[in-house]
Image (cartoon, rainbow, N blue to C red):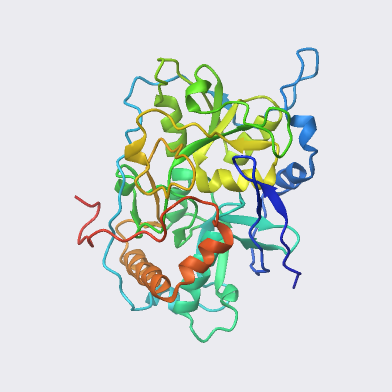
Length: 386
């Protein structure tokens, strides 16, 4: 299937206009989940009808399933221990994957509705995004003679965060070779999975409604500090949710954590007035601003967040309140997974030299304020890293 690539204008977080990434056609076999339809409705919904909370007299809008309000925590805020080291790269193709035939090649777990990183394009019937471009590079490197590397990939939709880790287990009916969602490489998660080298630096921030629903309107709340006592939604089993549960504003007021099954559910609830903010990594939230132009990122940095802005390029004020290195996840204690992880690290390094990473970043994340392709830390020889 072929389509014409197009460019359209979408809202900049600070009210300026910017071109959306050009999306070229891709091809893949996949089992499509129910949230595709939900995201499609969201894209078509008029912005003005969801820009403000419903009146008390109105029938309340439906709440997505598996949504609940959580208690706050007395644990330390901003306490994510991050991992920026992996095993040394290896150019040896992973034999366990190499020997598979077409249609049963590389099995990769992806997100369904992350507009910048990986999403299902119902028009072209394929997955697209920054993570997808990186996965395609891995497939090309394993099967360099294959004209269409998508024929060698099976994409499977996985839950967000560490909820996907079960699908790495050998006895799982929908087992995947690795997970290519927007995963933060944390020390706690490294006890469960092997991480590749960091392939994208980001930070957690907040998406809110625009005051009047207009694409150039100001954010309803300037920053996280104004959201004390307000409902902030994040996906279950993610570091994003853990950070909201433990966050304290400078005044001592805490946000009210709301857990949803998926971040796209949070976006729906934001537009329906059921929550006041959505919090996750900026690379994901930038995609949400493209899907819903009546939303915007907050613009006011939280106090004392300089340690979390080390990898921010300073194009606009840094509103990050965490450090979020992104990495692919592989099964632990599995020689085949270790060989694949080392090969993926080799492909990432090759993408640095060939500028393919920069090309993919410009296409999907041109407005994400990171400092470029991360430099790997010293290679490790055991896992988890010490």
